[in-house]
Amino acid sequence: MPEITPAPCAPEDVRRVACIGAGVIGGGWVAHFLARGYDVTAWDPAADAEDRLRRLVAAAWPALEQIGLADGAAPDRLTIAPTLAEAVADADFVQESAPEKLELKRSLLAELAAATRPGVVIASSTSGYPMTDMQEGAENAVRLVVGHPFNPPYLIPLVEVVGGERTDPEAVAWSSRFYEVAGKSVITMDRELPGFIANRLQEALWREALHMVANGEATVEDIDASITEGPGLRWAFMGPCLTFALAGGEGGMAHMLDHFGPSLKSPWTRLEAPELDRALRDAMIDGCREAAGDRTYADLVAARDQGVIDVLRATGRLGRTRR
Image (cartoon, rainbow, N blue to C red; front, side, top):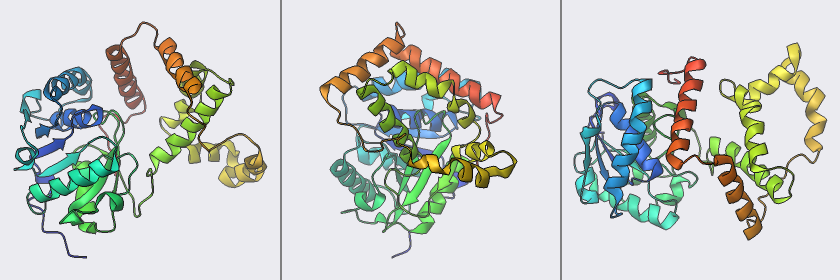
């Protein structure tokens, strides 16, 4: 594999970030980078993209002010470029957040690799595609990496970083360091895994939730409450593995496995996804509508953002990132 062209600057010296795609995830990245004091150039082909993006940043800014802005951070450091090429022309880092369609990702990443200055790393926000699959057809694919965030990127610290078969390891290392400097909590994966780490765990819970709704075993409200009032409280500061280790008392994980191991054979979970037929789709939509009540989308976003801030503050992690 050819080595990556040396990056134009060190991760600590990045000044301008280009965000390609300005939907929920791309817009969340824009808000995050602005709050960290970067100049941000955004591009999205949708006719109403600029209006939607500026509304998203304005809605996110009160939460970002609570957690603390970098010196010089301001929404007016956002520029909307008329073309993709102009968006990346002077970027020190590129974050791609296009819709989750493989052929679209391939063509867009190939276009970005051709338009971006040599050595500038291009990261994809993909939630499941391996970079190896997305690199096909791209020239200079050595600087293409996955930088998978969690929604909303301006509040949830986690980003999972991994390269593809054609990615230079130096690009992965550079990206991980940049995200750390930009205030993220980084997991640098040493191999590709469909869905990465966090999404695979989240997907297992999601599939079981769909099964319970499809079979009439629990309502949407029951399922959400079972997490927010139960294990979710522990997961906010301790992952499932250490949580289960504590269930083993002083004997730790060894005792827990010896004691509860046989239950792994019990029919508690069904990891195969259920058929998403009309009835299940309607049940999920109606259940979420009932759970939301008279709260608007903006109301729910504000409640979610405040909840994340409260948990981060309560667990001593506000402003702290994982190293």
